[in-house]
Image 1: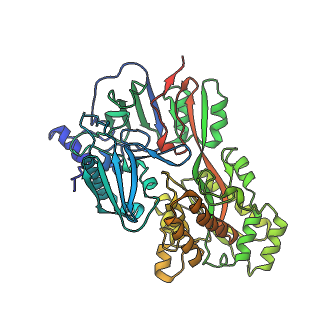
Image 2: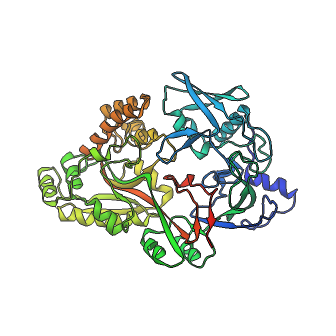
Image 3: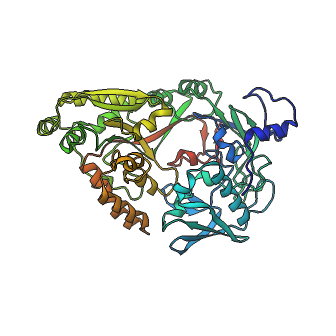
Length: 511
């Protein structure tokens, strides 16, 4: 297995034993000064944070330094990228043919061994990857120079789509060098805890990208990102608060870009804690909620009212076939009276970092009060939110789940299978879970995993969606739209549904 050096080890090597300067001030990699147009994109997260050590300290998201074998299209389907084709040799064996016209940024030719080395590096850093993609660390081998074989632990027809993710962007095998990939941009400079600067790879197989320089700068505070856009110190701002989107769009020099994403916001309802273990009460809560008001009044009209737990752009989602329950508060109140509800307050769990969810929780609490159900909102910090949720401590939890690849199967399993990541802890402890409806849904999910066509997946996963909505295991709220701000003269960006995959190669400035 390839030895992976941490970013700090790389820093030590570059410094040659000299004393390191303060974080955020040291240039790790430098290149020739770019000529022509330069662009700066402000990100909400540090593009150099330590979890990206597996990629030489540079985020694989957004930057397009690294490319995966399989691409995700705007329709959330797979397409060739570094692999020209793939086939299932048998139920648990996949072979991928590697493009022969690909070179790394240092001029070396892409080989199957480089692909194996790159996957080894990811396996070494992220212990949860085998469970995600269904491949153990020794399950990736080179058949010959241009063929890579993957051995899955069980039949998994969605495997190609699962690795159409930037976590599986291919790197040069020499981990001691600066980050070297095959993408349209190469790394020229890294300021730790601050920014990554890229320049076009001049020998890129599809032609040289337009911008002479592209910088990704970390601006954590959303208000500061907006102010930086307004004073023209950046060209594009990620995650503009929805409450400020109208102001940015109405200003003469700036505009917003929105795109429906494969992410849904919903309420996960605990099926095993009293009083939400009563199906009539759960259905009452669904009848009380007005999704359109949430989108219009809380999300400032940015998003789509949801009917199901999966965004409508996911190919096997059955949004149009699912019922709408509300708002009908009279019906909701009748169901409360028919239930065993005795007046005890429902606990609503919210991630304290998500201001929209905090507002939504307050709105929901008011609607529940209208139908005779009391509630208490509990905000917890991001570090403990997921553990609190999967421990089943709340009756209702506001969550947002979506996919960063063409294969969204893992969402179904994680959310609703008894042994999925959201339910496994309690299922193994006492046979319950959080919002897993039971053995029949488990069976449908397993059949959907094995299905080989989108139509077959839609049949199985459609039944899952119908059941979790009918039983009140979830209260769908909205399908999320991301919001970017840009200078009005900046054009040519390909706004992909997954914002990690936005393309910058044709970005330009209309003077």
